[in-house]
Amino acid sequence: IGVGLDFEGEEARAIDDEEAARLDTIRRYLDVADDFSTEASRLSGDHREMRAHKSGGLACPDDVLVAELRSGFKEILRTIGHKLLKGRYDLTGMVLPMKCMMPRTLHHQTVLSCGHYPKFFLSAAKSNSMLERMKWTICSYVACVQQGVVFAIPLMPQLGETTWMTAGNVDFFLEQTCASPPTTHWQCTDRVGSYDVSGYSCFEVHAGWNSLRIVNTGVRRVEFWDGHVISWKVPPDLFSGVMFGNSLKYEALGRTHFEDSEGYTCDMVIGGVRDRPTDYFAGTIKDPNDRVVCRVSGTYCGYAEFDGVRYWDERVPPMQFEQSDDASRLPSDGCFRDDLSALTRGNLEEAARCRERIEEDAKRLAGIRSRHFSNT
Image (cartoon, rainbow, N blue to C red; front, side, top):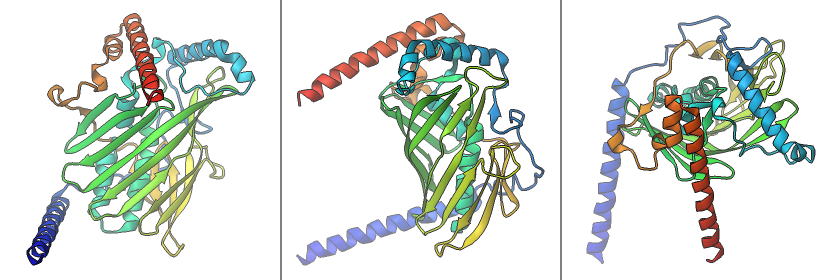
């Protein structure tokens, strides 16, 4: 028995030594890693990017695309109009013509919208301040809104489809884990282990009068090398002018909430800033004693400031995620889709035929799964 106890003690010490070595490696890496924390602080002014609409949000600058999208939405309306009148208006599975699509999957677009993650979460990991980490996490969300807004529609990933993209020593992995509602699990981490951003997201699309409302649910969290965790929730997305009007535009409206494992919280309201367009936001960060320790302000069209100090400005470019090399990709990687290949070449008819085949295969496999689980 004594020998067994000694072995367990030695094993525990070995684990402790391994963990200490891991933390030491991370600390040494963070000491010499590039410091991006002051990139935006040199910029100033009430800046909004070129797509910013005068009343708020981001407007589609491509009149031809607007016409094609509206034509596609009207065709869908003709098909399911009776359901809209009866209140059954979940459009999550809607399929638009290929002329409305972009040569990119929703996975790819998700990763590209997170181009500021490597810089912001590295800056957060380099700091020992819980408040500073909260600020950089808030910036990651705000910048993600601005980077993620596109008006051409990305291809919808199929169940089991995966994506792996890289930026420097940062890997971004995604997998489509549910078809209805569409659900994606994802992870973004640097190879040293200084932070790990992960979670899942699912969405539903609902039609309104000349608008589409996208309700996002799921878990979003970042865990830093020392065990500190921050999680957050996002408000719904609104696309207005989808049928008619002077512009087709996007808005994020509502409340977003951040909280961490130490008791810090942030509640931020988008669209409620007096005498400002709807893309402006304001909020406060509170410490574990519920005292306000920082005020947050800005616009997802341009910048984010904390007590007047600028941490993010859209004029500072994000890092570019790229596809991993062919030899490393799984056979399920979305880059191998036939419709994506055809769409990239500009062959819309072939892309439409390929998408049909992919959807038929998905229905066939769904039937097999349904029969299998009903018999078990």
